[in-house]
Length: 91
Image (cartoon, rainbow, N blue to C red; front, side, top):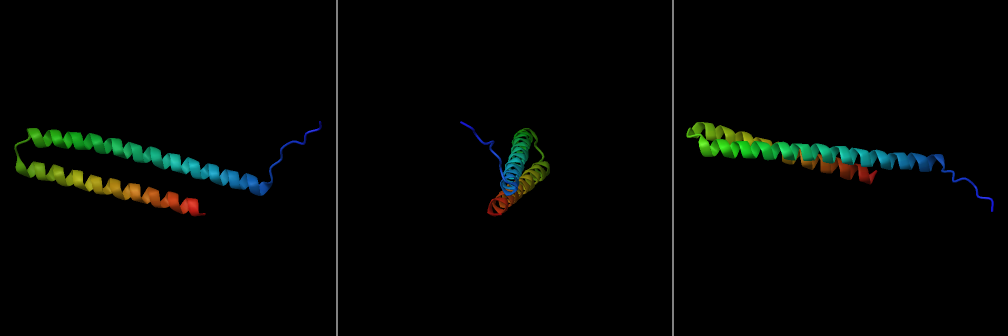
């Protein structure tokens, strides 16, 4: 039998490239979110250690406020990434 080579059209290749780019961006965003989450866990453990061992109340308040701001920034980052991914999937 004579088989024809599998040729893809230009629009099909562009669509495949677009899908591949979306997956690469999603993977990149997932890696960034994982790194941020790991840093958050480290900051949380350090802050708990400081809260347990430091007697100064003002210092504890500063640490807790810094950790809460970091949690807020992490939440905003995750929501932003989720919004970008949903927007890319709609296109």
